[in-house]
Image (cartoon, rainbow, N blue to C red):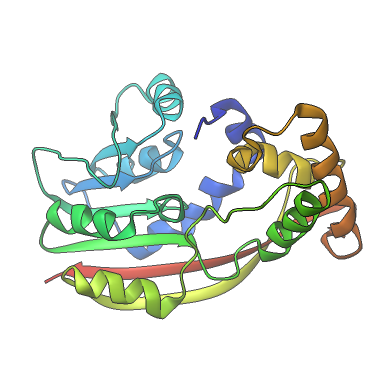
Length: 248
């Protein structure tokens, strides 16, 4: 998928702002080697580096990495696919915020993460979980069907048991798992839902004419107004999964 790094930073800064509390799970230490997997525009990579750790940011999006390198030129960033990347060293820890639900080849990603950790190394992650943005996706599906188009699920939003089982299969020992709701206010007070799909759901509209896309999005947004427009703000029904694990 093609990412708009500027829109991401201006309207979706909450993605990396919420990640600050995930850093508390990691407790990075000076001198550690840390891989930020799915680093996006690099804000959390830079935050990790403030600990004195040596941090590498990795993302599949060239536009995201270009933005990260421009804003944090002192840090190391790599464009690579999480399901197939190969770096020349192992890390003390891998950190991943709001990225793994984009990676549909989840078993290959788990294997890559395990391979790139030192024995006893830590994996700290947060991702969308089962039920994440379910209301938004249901509204989109219904609007698409009414305009004669089909909806195909795209993201991987697992249950606690499902994802911890994958990690255990590839050699991780899960030490902590937290599943929680986090209703999230969207930046655009007029068209927050439409803007959200423009940012994250472009893949749903391949081969759909622009006018029809606009009509679908407006219909989906209006159907959500009674439940998802509160106090002058649009709210998305985020559900998150956090996990702390170690490599055997």
